[in-house]
Image (tube, rainbow, N blue to C red):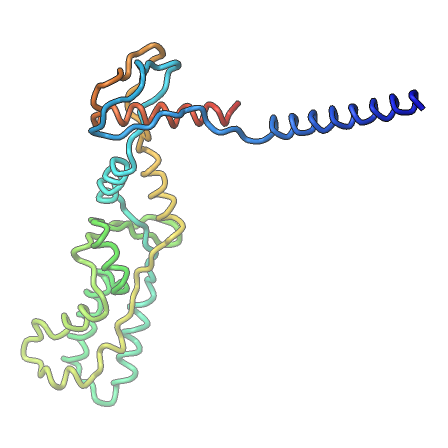
Length: 252
């Protein structure tokens, strides 16, 4: 009986040991929280002992600083637009065919010339032009079958509405009322279309030139001591130490 109890006790102890080992393994495999436990704010005193860098780490730029650099680069960004070269020919032909029974040669020559000029400037969707202007884009690159054929200044681009109004400017001796009767808006459509894939690729490459950091704090370098007020520069450095500590911990 005593022997049986001993065996039962031993088995129970083994189960407890196995349970403890299992729990230990689980805790070991679980992601650990970072060991950067400092709390700090700009304008508040540092509440801890002297803080020095225990390893080399970069000083990270703030989100606002990176955003400002991105906004600045956007002014240099040149998006790519595909051109529909056949558009102007098709619309002129459509205009001549649909109005052949009432169109005099003088009016025909005027409208054809103006359509050619307008499509040469480039017509884009209204929303697209507004987006380009909002982003501060100065010019676009024009491609035909993936071949760069030139650039156009944003200020010279047209929408169908702007192009339509331009038809009636400098009409000379043409009767405006008669000119409007041809419904010229029917022969105006976009001939420039954003190549989103190529433009995003170019934008990404441009943004990749922005460094996420500036400067380096070396191991052993003094950062801040108890009672000192945390200024904006101190905050960047301490926050950079926090980010680097977390990254270092995750990589282990």
